[in-house]
Image (cartoon, rainbow, N blue to C red; front, side):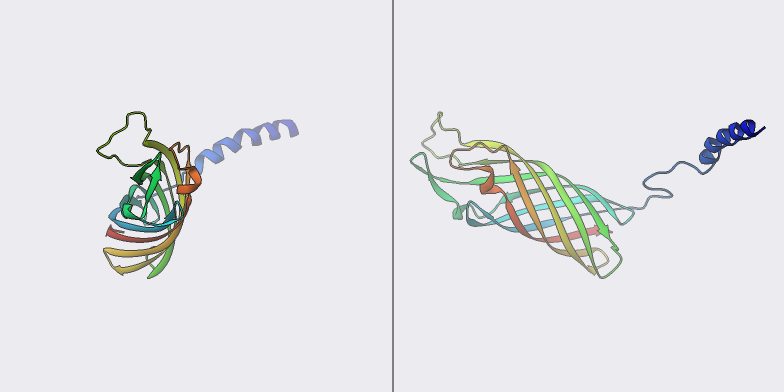
Length: 196
């Protein structure tokens, strides 16, 4: 009798679990929003001050999770003129990719978010009129950039973020440059326009 009771109890466990319903990351109705806007990143590249200008945007899920993309390019090329292979060259650099973000308590006036970009970029020494086909002047690289932001709700449709990020660059093969030359921290200013 005890064995029969044990078997019956074991058979009822899956039925009880199934009755509780399927567990998911998000349940109930999903609220959607979206945003887009310009971004300024103040950083150091090759031991010089660099200004990266770009933009980002994304789909906001339940006021909390963002699935989006961003792209950024070097705006102050004049700061990055170097003698490479006997010629004066200017660095050109940009990157972009998928951006994921978690926003904490987005309804509060001041709140924070944690984000990460994973993608690719490119760097080259520019081209001049005296083109040398033997000079390898460009290469692609992998980039990952986690970041943290403090966000202020200015209006219902406009937010400003102040934060920092750290850019990891891998697999850059360009004469006169290494991964470390493009790896480093950034101060970030973000303007978000949209439905939050």
